[in-house]
Image (tube, helix red, strand yellow):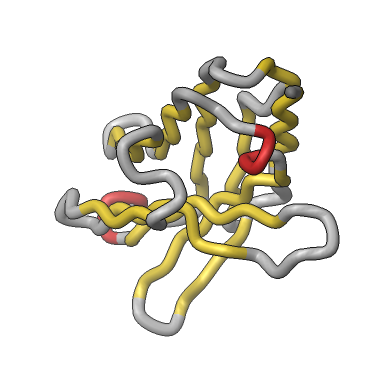
Length: 115
């Protein structure tokens, strides 16, 4: 059974930082491309950042220079370090694992940035 479990979401003030974690089980983690997505109320889910199985990263323009995605294959965990947070970053953040036609999602963790 595949599970992606996110943690680290919280209420933080503008300019603050958070680190999200996503622990994966039931998959060969090192083979999967991993990503973080977010969905704000009334909006579609959008890409935040991805990291390939080889370690290449990609970021949405809105978070470039503020967020950093990383992975620890030994721990089966992907991280999202979020700095200089803005109210516009408020959303539920979802972890995603993808390998060819296989795709899995976590349940999400709430990030709220107060002004």
